Length: 292
Image (tube, rainbow, N blue to C red):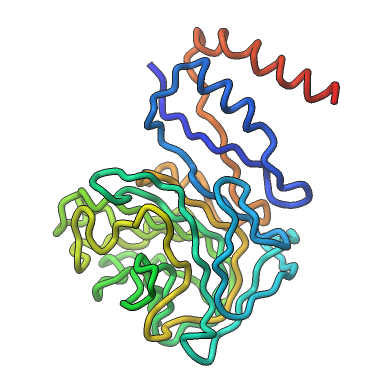
């Protein structure tokens, strides 16, 4: 038996930041007989002076004023995309993200995870983090509130949980969604916000919950930082990743806090017998790369 395989290989962010062994990933997948619906990283962006994707599709929908700069994250330099607060809905900063998640749990994308390393100016009201309505004609779907809680539908922190988003410093935040789970309980509902690897809030009864409902994604894109009534902010983003399943608390905890290197994706090592079959293929590809 084999544990979960996560595909979508990418290197650490600084310096080269290129995807380096997609060919190995493909050979690995074939060799181990990877199931057709393996859980995957479907999109990754590192904002290294442009909007190209390390995994998935480049960002071409760019609203508002953005620029690239170098900032310190954890004592290391990182190239980031900074965005300025707008003066109208036409100039508010947001990005259209082609997420790459196929239909799951219904006719739309109902299970997914959004991860990002982000810094926001001090929050005084609400700041939208993402918007499932690609027309931006309705309210955003994940917010930071003035008390630094995160969520929706009036539910921004779990009782007794002191974890909060931090103003004007780098946070690694995550949202896990599975709209096929039952609403009404912090144990069952998978609308979960994390800060620096720690569960911050479970929204037990999100408005519009259910398969193919408000929090499902259309099969193309969602909006990052968008909101129809201008609950937006200035700030910066260092890395963004999308997965096509709701990550577990343990997986997110393992990612820790924001890093200059962004996100690194790797496979889980299979059982010994499978590895013995696959290893010669991997070594062969590596040898070819060295000759080049």
